[in-house]
Image 1 (cartoon, one colour):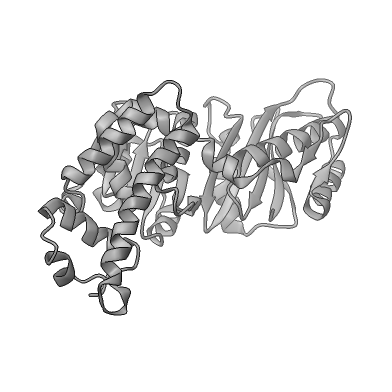
Image 2 (image 1 turned 30 degrees about the vertical axis):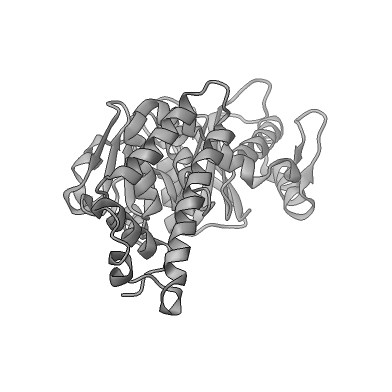
Length: 343
């Protein structure tokens, strides 16, 4: 964990950043205020949102004041936790405990004591306000919490476009007007490339502001979520665009060559659909089925690399095997993504 902060909305409707420990920069504070639903006039409350900015994760829990409370003239508050790790369930659980403490005492002091206890000992205990134990929240469970089954159920064979884009470290932009649907869908996508276990590519909640887009552009490949439908017109931001309400996937003209589909893609797509349609298979089993197939492809790639000088794949080396054009194209771009290509 890096920091904990408080945003309050008072009876006059004013929203202010009121407290932080130890501190955040002015830039990060502005980003966090923009993500907090209390600053978004007249919109619904979002009890929990999360996202990433400048390689820092943020988790924002918003509550309406419940009586009895020591907080006077305050109607709502948001607790903001910033961290270096991705684990929404962990920080949602901790935030619930800290929110109860703040609602009861009306001062950050007790809340800060629990925060420091978790920071130093990995635990905070309270009969009345709930307990939190760090070790109960394995990061792998956070990775598995998204549902690839639901993704494949929604998009069927077209899911192979998402799989291929992630394998090749392309830029995926997802739109849905509801933030909760956006978070649920986007967090699942990195599991398509389970062998990397890399959720740093996830930017689930972005606005179309230059400061956020500049940060996004630092990433070579990503999964980025936007509630603003205008993002569909920003072809400079994506190789693949997912319109969730319409269940459509669009490949940008510049990415069509790299994402050209062939028999290898059809085979993987059919495997994904069959696995996801099996009612008895869990999300973890679906991920394992896809991961097993991915490992076979990567093993083939490694054996091709082993044939070559410096264990790197060359265009000439690929051509010797007379693969179908789409397969050769996929292996070439995959070698580049896995840093196995010699140019």
